[in-house]
Image 1 (cartoon, one colour):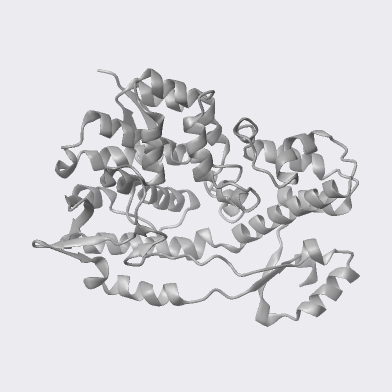
Image 2 (cartoon, rainbow, N blue to C red; image 1 turned 90 degrees about the vertical axis):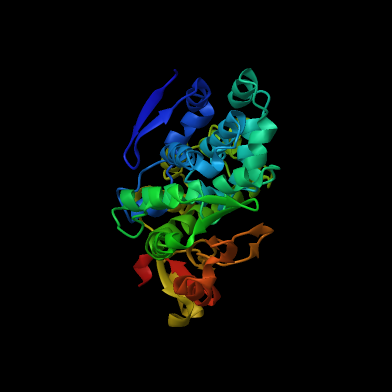
Length: 402
């Protein structure tokens, strides 16, 4: 019997029982994920948060193997099980540098890149899938949530899926916080399939509440940390300055900068073959080059990204914008790059019902009846109030002005 084992710092030993998984992991497309941080700029706040999209991917694979051990999923064919495991393993293969941070400057999201990489006939993934008689379109359909077997879709992407169960625990552990100590095996062991839905018995409610509470605190303390928000904002204005210089026919000291970002600079989608050359390492190398630029703004922004010289964050109600602009100009800072105003993205922790065309309800089975979690959980009800709260506008600018 075929068996390979990877030792993981979160789940312990992770077993791979078919050569296709190791062959996929060994491709340059997957190995690239070793060079992409899971949490992007969050490592500026939590030094231990240097775990990668690669470790998360094998963690999702592992949790899916636990789900597939459930009696209610025993009816799945070996082929269906293999396909959903492949989808979980590769669901993040399309992430760009610094994970979600790069999506703020890229014209195509990572999900779209994931599906294109898997379906690319010139790529390594496509060839391996075909060799093992796996249809790449079927793997992609699970990632896109369109597979005819809805359960396969829900295992990879739903309110309580393998993806979230891994990243919450992995992120918390690597950040050194205790907000998401999840009882994963309890949750997975009690999963049931009813009416093409993943449901949980009523006795699972406390474990599910712990999961949701952990998710809420992770958003508040980790995902929405001011260092992460500031890093993303700096990355955006760095690209804005790069694009403005390109438009003004600036003579870049290193012409490769224009070659690497040609599509982005011309508001086009980066082709797969170039996209796969980008990772955190290559971006930091570029920042090292541009911090020596004769353009002082580009040089300064590059140095800030390299050396954790992030912008400070202040609520818009606490400062006068016109005064800030004057202070910036007096200190030699161009406000269009050094004064950023934004309303942070709203983080929806949980809500019953259909969101963006997908049922986000966590279903609870009580005897023969299915009810949404909010029917039984006071915490789920309190999430409604949290979801209704609006984020305040903030200003980001150099700490020198404070």
